[in-house]
Length: 321
Length: 132
Image (cartoon, rainbow over all chains, first blue to last red; front, side):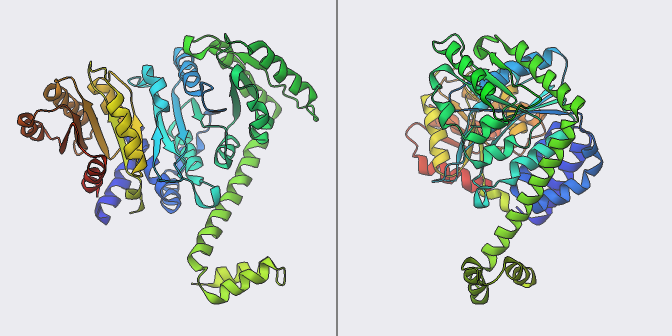
């Protein structure tokens, strides 16, 4: 693709985005995913839209097979019933072997394919430098700016990338199923700690009551008493059972965040994390581009053996052309 | 530009055709060839296919058709893609397409037709070539 085509595409995407056309959003998502530098210039161009932040962002995480996509589908139906505009991001892992990905979550959301009030986008984690993938959060930022009332983000609850994404949302919903009761232990500990709501899906299956009791008991054992006690909600997402209750709980949590000022606290924490992520990725990219230089490789080994401080190393990197 | 590294493909099954094993196998093969593949599921209408193609900003739409209704379905899909502003979308078709019908599909705008027995490597390479 020639440079003129590329520039045209960016221009068209920005104009269409500002005109609130979905295909503009679609094009810009592709561009910010492709390159953080491009992301920077795009964000600076659409700047004024970013001020609009009444959008409530909900993350859905949990082990594979828990029914997250089906649950997102059911929740979307409830939100649409309330006349709200919904954006959905479904994240699936990139294969470390081939670099490709099967993005099949949206199959469960077919009922919303033609709804003008619902935008669905499938993303692959794309690995990312050092395990971090700023792209997903950039896409989230873009979608926040577009003007949805609710943004639903779905990822598989394993891996650093997904944990990172969950720390970028307002409300974290952890979705579990009765037969995967043991997975509470194997789930990344961080996810259980940042869960704001717990859902026991496929609640008609044996073990459902036990799982709900275990989850409630876990809340009771939590060392620090948080001001928000995460509710445990039973659902059968494929039958739209429990989704109204879940949406109520989500709205209730949103209200809690606003009233206690915790919304601002989380946003500051999120910005700080994002800053550190951006710095790390930048550094890693710089290092990868320079690591063959003998003088830098020598400095690197001195840093690792603690003979010199990181400051000197960073200075050398910054001064290298 | 870097983004051509990640080729995004939509694999769609339009119409009443209920056989999806072929589509599922091609989804995996394209994934193994390094592509990001969105699969919509069975019984998609041309409108649904076009809207998904737009939202997912795919490079290629691959239609899996085993029902015999390929000419009509392809025409409808091309019309809906145009309505979504995607008139330059690369559309390829796989399935049980008689050789005599291939020129008709090409006349509608289909870039490649992969008959039964096409090799996955050939399909993946052909798709890559169309996207560069």
